[in-house]
Structures are given as structure tokens and as C-alpha cells.
Length: 474
Image (cartoon, rainbow, N blue to C red; front, top):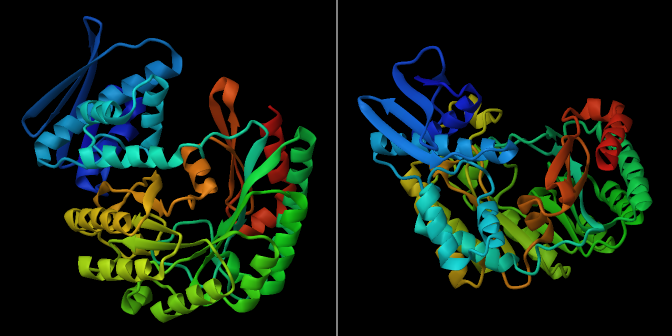
């Protein structure tokens, strides 16, 4: 247990996240602990002075004082976090690949630099100097911005549609999403009725404002946990209410939920992109993590989708799964590349507090091994013709690494870019779905989260739609 004391209590949580970059999911408290970290913030000669001390070591970091609202808060937070990072690096001898960054969207920093006329290698050097990000990661960010060029600018009259299906056939051991096991299915029809009502209310508002859908994404959960009739009915209603999306994604996800009738329903309703997610091609690992399918079923489902004419299939893999070696991961990667999907997303395992893995005392994989998996995937996918097009980070990830989406030329997913870069409004429906509405003139984003509990969502759906309406019209 670590005790962290600061005279900037509003930044205590942020400083804890920096400590966890080096110490993992350690317990940190303000009142007690075997190890003590002290932080003193002061001002001197026009500078913020961040002084950190622990275990006989003292580190002092300075930064120019910035005055004024949000920018002052932002720069002060960065100065304090950098000082904490430098102390922890000296104490441990470890240099995390993303340096002092703890946020989930490091590409945002590159875009900020671009707005100031700093691009390419100059932008990479800036992030390396200010945030101690490794050259490999700054190069990755540059590659992603190159892939996003021409895709990230959204007209003012467009939004992305997200429809959430919070049902799965089983719950994965690493899952922390707002989803529930399908069970006897008693909540499915009431849920779909509520969802269609929310969709209708939202569609009326979009028509009122003259806005149109740029892309549509049905996720979960597992949308294909629904039967073919339910899936067809929901997609037909979505297309009636929100016509014209140029990209339509459905997370077919679980190979054991995919059959010809469901794929036909997707096809008949204009779905252009699906996910068939192996996570791993090790049957033993699939059993351990609670996936109710085999590697053979993944290959079979992929082949069926291809034979029916689906031209954009995404596949997800997870690095650092419980018990998996680097050799296991690279075998899964090789099998994925052999299938030649149009896009591949490589996740790094994150053991979230609400997951079964955390409850069972799951231990993160060795950081060095996880890094070799992620870096090796990037090289192998690059050699196979894929390039990185979006990235995000999460707390509690093995090796403090990242999730990266790779795609062949012309196959980047618009919704994924828009959602991660927060450059497009997201209109979201369903239990646990979060609407993110951009107000460009004020340079702000407001969120309207729906309740996560399925039964509460069903009974409160009008409230969810009204909450969004109030937000959007504000």
C-alpha cells in the first residue's frame, strides 16, 4: 500500500494514475501506507515548482505559470503529473512506452500540435521531450494521423449512430461492459420495444434539426445474440428512421452466434461491415476466458460470411490473455492474417475492476512480453498490408500499452475514428449507451449516458430520450 500526500488535493487522483503506470493496480491512500510519496506545489519566479519526494529521492520539475480558466487547470495538471512521472521513473528505473500520458486518446496531442503548425518528426520530438513518449509510439501516432487524413473532417450536419444490444450468450472473464447474459431471453422483446421507441424519439429530433447519419454502428454485448427475425426487424427500423448512412457496422462478434439467416438479415438491410472476433485461436484460452466457441467455429463463421459476399470483415485479437505465451499470440495472429480480413483490431488485455478476472485475482501479464506481442503484431500486420488507423488506451492494461485498429487501404472504419477522436457527434441508443454531442463553437463535448441496467432502461426509456433532447438543444 502506498500513501500519497499532496497540497493539490484536486489532483490526487491524477497523481495516483501516474504512480500506477509503474506499480500496477496497487492500493493508494491519503491517510496510511507502507510507502510514502510527498508532493509539494509552489510558485517561484513565474514558475510552477512541483517537488516530489519518496524513499530518500527528491525530484523537482518546473513549468511556466499559465493563468486563465481551463487552460490553467490543464497545464498545472500536466506539470504535476510530469514531476510525479520523473520521480517514479527514478525510483523504478522503468520508462513506460507512453511516458507520463495517462489519457485514452494520445492522438489528440498530435492534432493540437498540427493546429499550431507542428507536424511530422517535429511533432514526434515534441511529445518525446514534453511527455517522455517513446519514439516507437510517436511514430505510431504519426502513422495513424496519416491514415485518418481525409476521413476525420465531418460536415456540420452529420452525426454517427450507435445502437447498443446489451446481451451476450456468455460473459467473458475480462468483460466490464454494460451487458448481461441472454439467459432465458425474457428481457429481449421488452428491450427491443423500448429501444425502438428511443430510436423513434431520437429520429424525430434529428429530422427537426436537419441532421443526417454519417455512419451507423450496432455493438454490445453481441447483437447476433438476437435471433434472425429480431435482428432483421431492428435493422429495418433503424434504416427507416436513420436512412443514408454510408457505413453500417454490426458486431457479429461471437462466432457461435453467426448463422446464414442472421447474415442474410444483415445483408438485406445494407450492413457493410461486420466483426467476427476470435480473440485467440487457442481453444484452451477460449475456455478459460468464458468464450462459448472454438477456433474452428471462428474459421467457419468467417468463411460463411465471405461466401455470402461480405466484403469488409474485422477480426479482434487480444494480447496478453491469461496463460498465453508470446508464441500462442503470434500463432493466433498468423491465422488471422491467413484469413485476410479487411481490418484487424489488436487489444491489450485490461483487467477491469468489475470483470470476473479481477474478482478471481487475475494478474497482469509481464509488461515486456505484452510489449513484444503488440510491437510484433504491428510489424506483421504492416508486412501483410495493414496500417494503423485508430488507437485508444485504457486503465489497467498490461504493460500500459494500447488498443490499435489496423486496416487495409480504404478499409478504415469511420465510426471508430469519429468515436475515438471525438470529432463527430455520437447519437447513442440502448442500455449503457453514451451520447456524445459536440458544440464546435464552444469547443466542448457534452455526454448523456443511458442507464446500464436493462430493466431500468426499459422502464425509463422516455427519460433517456428526454435527457438527450435537453442536452442537444442546450
